[in-house]
Length: 351
Image (cartoon, rainbow, N blue to C red; front, side):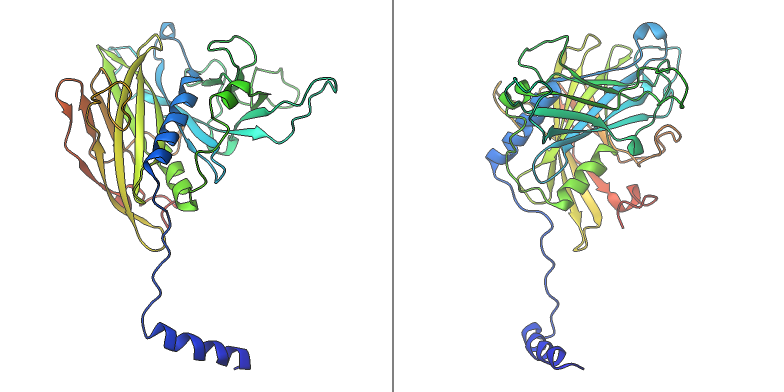
């Protein structure tokens, strides 16, 4: 034993007194203004997002879901756009239709501000990029095609200057270009003016970001109007308590108009090593005022639950947690328990 080792043992053993050192907290509490800021940011980002797929005229067009959350300590974004198993409107086809197909993406400011023309002033750029390792690439004619667009301009509605990517497969060398878009970089004046490029805080930890990514693959929402399954845009972010996460599901009618949001809170327990164990999923009650946050406003019955993660493009959904719901007449259903050990048992994500 070296002299240094002996000194360290002499110092540490009495200090420990036979007790283990408590595990460091893996997340930190947030303030109410920090949570409100995150909720508002993700809402404004989703308002600028358009996710398009197969049209109703093509028959078995899947409904679409887009999820966004935060990707790093600087407060920027990552997301997942997917085609649901259930088709939008076709009572002759029983759900499920096809397995879910995924388009994973991230949104980051570009470091370079110098433009092609040296006479133009410097201008902040924003990049929208697809993550091919987490996406299912398909033919442009497939019913599972996804085109994701974000408007970074100052105009509320624009036809140019848009960030656009899709999940079209990259043609083999020598074949004709098929319109695939893997990356898109544009000026981000609108995003900057909207406060989307300034982080609300830098308090997210590695555990938070890991849970955001896992929940994108697990949180699913079902909202039906008549015989039609509706599209949803979902924001996943932190709550004030160190172990709570918030989920806002914004529902759209067939014309893309908002039908309000179903808001939920997910409390998660984990071990000192960060292994997720159990939790409780609760739907938040109806809002009492137009400016209130942390509440539900959706005008159609909306259900929410956590699925067992599947291999997109190949596996159908095969299990999940008991769901919760919000009804515009009767309000929220009772909370349900979540067993993360069971839901993530066949993955490598909870080791």
